[in-house]
Length: 358
Ligand code: B12
Image 1 (cartoon, rainbow, N blue to C red):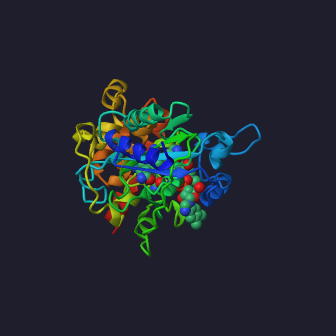
Image 2 (image 1 turned 90 degrees about the vertical axis):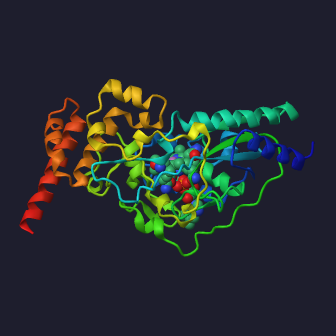
Image 3 (image 1 turned 30 degrees about the vertical axis):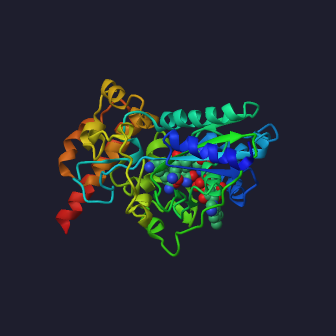
């Protein structure tokens, strides 16, 4: 089979497997990869040590595919839409409710959803070319997926650093297949952010140091999902009511205004996770946490992280009626939850005493 007929086969198989988009990137030292070592050196990865993994010569693995997979010639990039019809986090909501990111609303974990489909594409490819080498990754591979997605024509890297597609917007997951085969590559998509800066302006914690550049240690998604232990004081009252992840920089993006929905049963929204009650999450028992979030990406924050985030959200809700709940939590046996609850009580009280003084 020729390079281009194999590329066509890959794209057909990706569509058959249920992917919304697929493209092929060559393996090159793309200029965007040069920014990665500097990003790490600037501490922008926060405590996400896995991003800093290095090879034997001390080079960052993610900065060059040629070093970690010298056999790879092409990267197949597939995208899976996870958008469902529920409102955006920037719409008015009950102050007693929090926000769990859109990508964590359905039963199961996207890593499994995407990997299962990637394996189907990979096996089709191997049927036609059994001699090739290949490897599938969703998130965990030593690769900055969005850079390859750009060069596979799946979308452009937006100012909010998300990959945006002209038709899908940015509510999609990525999965990649590295292959030793030279497949006919696609052309990179053009950048259509133009002069818009809505995402940069909307970020409550100023996580964007410049267009296309994020200090992840300031991103609410990092603070609520990846950061263990204490949330730095400077961010606590700026995190709003985000209890797991953050969608703000995508909610305000004009390309997401008419993003199509994924109506397949796998992506059916669990309504209890959309705008969940803050006091429910702050006081959730171990057993209920296990049952509610079994197999969900929310387990990454762990029960401690989720309760901590719910407690901070209570302070940011401005709801006086949370004070008794917080008083109870201030004596919680989990020291992290207890410390954040004490901070939250003070923050709420300060808010009321200043309201009275006004
Ligand atoms: C670590 C990580 C995070 C971190 C850091 C995010 C980040 N922006 O890097 C945190 C926890 C904050 C995070 C948050 C989210 N994540 Co995340 N995350 C990852 C992961 C595992 C690695 C990303 C990485 O390597 N970042 C390192 C930095 C350096 O890369 P970067 O920001 O992409 O920056 C590069 C480009 O911007 C580039 N660049 C391009 N143009 C230009 C121009 C100039 C001038 C410059 C200087 C640089 C530059 O240079 C940078 C360095 O190479 C990827 C999966 C993967 N393996 O790639 C998923 C991934 C990026 N995440 C994903 C998702 C869905 C999310 C969230 C939406 C989840 C949520 N709702 O909370 C948010 C989105 C926040 C955001 N605006 O990015 C999806 C993105 C899908 C998409 N459409 O873009 C991915 C691809 C996972 C997946 N398999 O689907 N994530």
